[in-house]
Image (cartoon, rainbow, N blue to C red; front, side, top):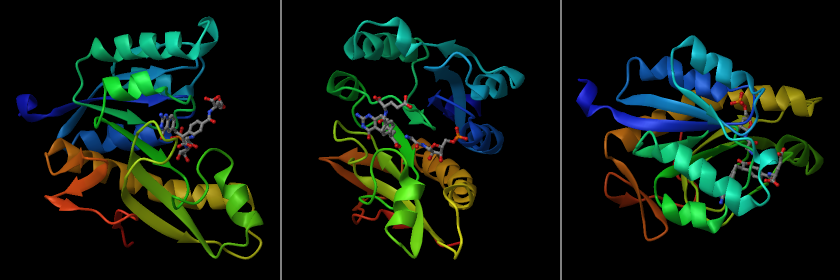
Length: 215
Ligand code: NHR
Ligand code: GAR
């Protein structure tokens, strides 16, 4: 059984609740978390990994002179574990094109908005400020275009009257914890790949929204 598992490395910067969802689902799924790497030494997600005896590394971006030097050390730390897939889960450093080319087609990110709306940070407040009636989460392949890689899946949540950014973020996060393990298992089973800049699932090019997950 072990030999058939897809090995993944998860990159985090903070709390790691998406990491926890991946840890919990990996027990009954087709992927194994080979390591967790954080750019922040105090990320709580590191403790979640240690609790489950998953190897951890810290590559602290503040101790590098340049983005390229950080990216290259991060890439080397990842390669130590020979993963088939790299999963960004609340990872907050922009990765340069050299990193992206090194691992092309093998990096996923989860982003708390309905891309192409609101790439970058502060997505929940931006959705509120725009008066959007719905908001949500996207999982996409990482390319050199920040939050602009092909979308694999999206799930929507309603924006409610009197929502604060925190309330909305919590509603989105609940969906994130369901969507991400599902998409990772698609990749692990060989159903999902990036081809010529498209997300392809079961040999079909996905639409710009990716698969729309219904609750
Ligand atoms: N890198 C590439 N090349 N492509 C993507 O699509 C990426 C990426 C790196 C991270 C996650 C992304 C998100 O889901 C992500 C996608 C950080 C920033 C950011 O502005 C923006 C988007 C994302 C992550 N980071 C600041 C920076 O200067 C630092 C912010 C901080 O440390 O708090 O790197 O939203
Ligand atoms: C999640 O909402 C994730 O989508 C978002 O940060 C949160 C991390 O939570 N990611 C980004 O904004 C990436 N720039 P977690 O650490 O509990 O998984």
